[in-house]
Length: 220
Image (cartoon, rainbow, N blue to C red; front, side):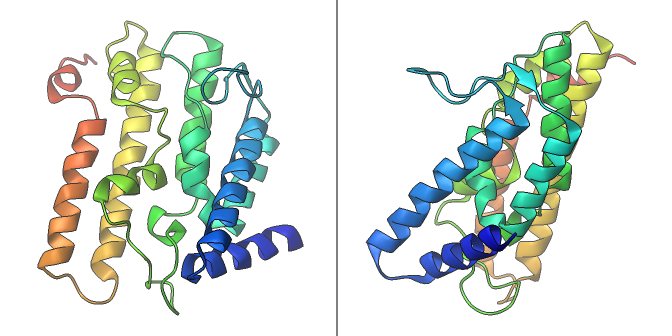
């Protein structure tokens, strides 16, 4: 899409711009475009006067594919998208299962987290890491897919819901693994600073995942 190509160019110019107004304008556009795309994936629109987007129903598989295509063409949208896309409360209902399946599809099919970071030069491995490792999480997993939701999911008495929650946990770990490998491969080669950053990221990841005991308590 020429529109997405234009946006991608604009986002990358904004990432390297010294003008705060240019950067702010594209951040504002990024946020609103991500909300629009999220409404295509999980319907229901905004909660007027509330927080975030309400997951009333799940739209079609072609709509999900379209969203993945948009983010693949403009990876800079991923973090903004993962900040607003909702996750249903873990219940043995079609709505919840559809929500979990949709989130899983997006996590598997959207571009790797590292390549969605702002560029800081030529080459695919020249990416600008956020100052704090915690700020990487919106590139890994939707912010609505919390530790509480995942913990409730794996402790459900419904085997299908437990299975879907475990798939989300596995997808989160896999996206994190790929991110760590990409950081290690990026120039300059891993230093003590890199290692400290990745250690902080690993700690943040552990805090977002369910505790070990509920996982060990899962029965076949």
